[in-house]
Image 1 (cartoon, helix red, strand yellow):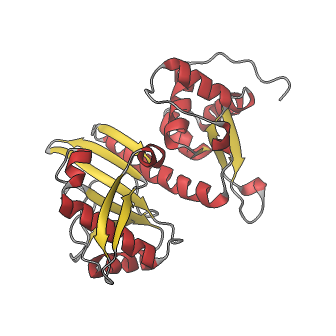
Image 2 (cartoon, rainbow, N blue to C red):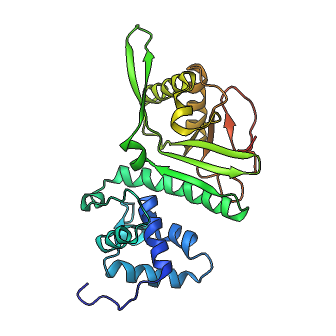
Image 3 (tube, one colour):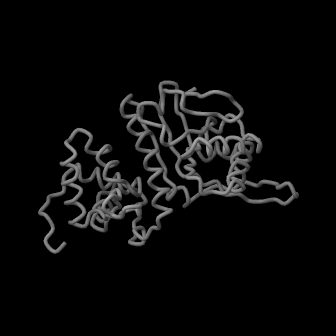
Length: 278
């Protein structure tokens, strides 16, 4: 825009920029819930519009049937926003490049699903005063990750990378709870998922995860988008030898109200549904 709306950067604008950087991509609705929850939706709309037209945010639209008119508005960090965060000194290893904006449809859909899970977890923890001590996204995890040796059925040794979609730590009244997230959208072949389970199982058996994450209680949360897919992945996990460290849930059924305290989680090798902190 040649003549963007006049603006002065405010503390809440920095919250928006930090959220978009840390989540990588957020919808208008997600940002409203995360940063503008105490305001009328029109305030969020106006401020995001202003930040976009002043170059602090970039805007994309996810291809959907019916066209852009009904597509959710997606926000990513813009160059001026990146410059502002870099100057703030809040991030030890801050990195942003313009090619971060060149993302495909599959990447966006996967990133949005991760953002949706993280948002629900964040709002749930905020409501009951459970601190989120740490949250690492895939971008950070890919920079430095472990590999584990697995012997295949044919006797060949494979080196498998351990790169979850997220790693996060919650501080509960009973101590720290550590989790890795695998967000499954149904596009991964069953064979590849089985290999992931083999990798995690070997990782737990080796004890290397304790050195990496400083915990004995790491759990793998696999969150997917259909009941049929969830049952299939749980069955694959059980056949591959995965046990009670592997938990499963449906993204659409998780809410900020139930994700922590309701029986919405399934566990490998166990019947029924469970709460996250069991």
